[in-house]
Image (cartoon, rainbow, N blue to C red):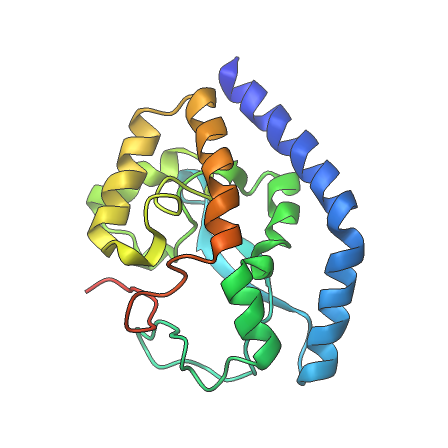
Amino acid sequence: MTKRLKRFIDIASSLILVIAFAPLMTVIALAIICESRGGAFFRQRRAGFKGREFEVIKFRSMRPGKPEQGHATGVRDPRITRLGGFLRRSSLDELPQLLNVLTGDMSLVGPRPLLLESIRPDEKIRLEVRPGITSLAAVSGRQSITWDERMVLDRWYVENWSLRLDISILWKTIPVVLSQANVYDPDGEMKART
């Protein structure tokens, strides 16, 4: 019953937010297209519920160009556009994922979606719930904590999930996003598995 309630909250909230942010999302999409060649959106296959892959949607923040193998994007990556840097710092690049929530591929709260091949066997527990736009790790330090610490927090979330926990994470997400804290680690990088 509580899982159904979580899904109902996801649908209702994401629908309201999509409608509320539609004008802003339209402006952002047009600005991205005007600033650099390519479409307004970035799509990538990620691991979802029960390991089923889906296309995560984000606003494009980089110029077209393939990263090196194992590359994690840092603040000094030359492919990041001026607007893209702002979108990343403000987390506005994540807004299109509300559409992923509507389709059922994601939830408002859950472990962040990763590439399927990057998930180790001992981390498969994170696939027992839908990935989220925000997460326990996101409100517990984001890039200021290690990859392994993030995985521990993801496991704890899955094992201790409750609606109260989700509400707490959503509430804590607001100041984290507004402060733009720990978007990158102290060296200006995005942590990848080491």
